[in-house]
Length: 115
Length: 115
Image (cartoon, rainbow over all chains, first blue to last red; front, side, top):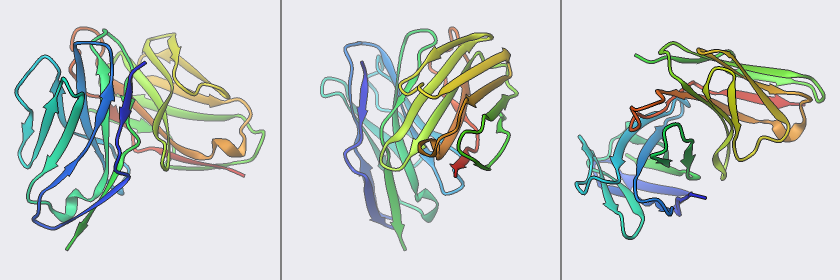
């Protein structure tokens, strides 16, 4: 069975600085999808960024980028120029390429932004 | 915009009560999910459904059942609520079938307290 591990329960970063959130996963599959979700205090989960495993190029969305290391089964999220609105729980998630498969989440990392 | 609506944001029920948590999505998504979120444990999948009247157990189905009579609605049922079911419940939906890289969209969560 696939698993997703986020080893940092909490992190803090100074406003305008850069922070990297770690995620590792375990799978025997060669093709899959990886996601980072953000859950702010409002509780509404929203997608931050996604990565297809068959793509070598790391995904980027504005200030958010990933470092996808397929061989190491690592999928870290880098937030540049951190803003107060980035404070949230961040969840790493995995989904198989099976047609209607479930999404597996890590335990989350709570990110604090220090003004 | 995709909208996933959970019927209650906060709910307080008594031990032994039968509890219904309702979730409705307006984007004709095939797949729907119920997760439970607890501090330090992340999101754990209770049940998911990939089509009307179809359901599959997730990682923690004990004490829960689900119903999906219509495509847009996915109900989570606590047959006899217990205090260890006090938690945040999140519903999600996503397109099924060939669009496999699509993300899940989440409701705003229901915080259930069983007393």
